[in-house]
Image (tube, rainbow, N blue to C red; front, side):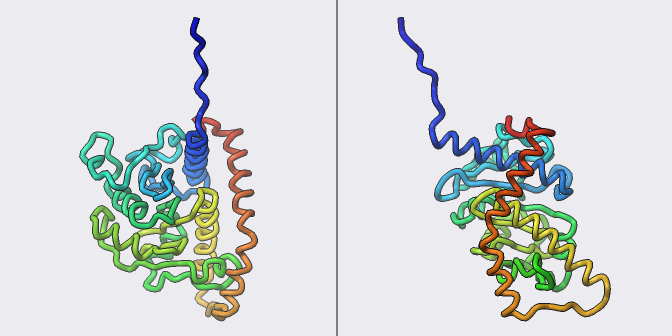
Length: 254
């Protein structure tokens, strides 16, 4: 009599499952924080070292319905997917597919239109002014793209976005929204969380009509550098939020 040995998930499979669960959690949390917009916008995370194979939410699926298993695995080098019934959203493919293909350092990419960051992106000068701890966190770490050309679904638009982002964690997309890049989902979430708060602070300060107390470049750079030892704080925050999801929306892991 033959004995069937149960299949044990490989290390790669376990790693991908953890990535799927983290990414699904980020979608659910985006809803909790009011960062989502209908059934649009996308988060992606690379599963291959070169970044070209990546996970992303499926076309027009609401963030609250994203689970670990229904994330789509895509190949940035395989354009044939756009001709299939399972094609990703054209603008998502344009932005995420191009960034993952051209910038392997970007392991995780969030593109959203949250209220504060999007409002900031509509200003003639959408730069993040260092006026407090949170705004100064991003000093020297924000790229700005003012080349808005409408719905981001053309190849040239994707290339410009990827090139402008470069090695920065934040891309303010003029007249559009924001994209956030990081090595892990937790770090991308932390960047987005603080950038949205920072944008809110800056907009509120602008609304007073009084002059801003903008830090000197030296002080802003010093403050930004002082954030670096606190990277672990973002992971702790994300882990806490996942524990809340485990209580209230455990199906995100399915």
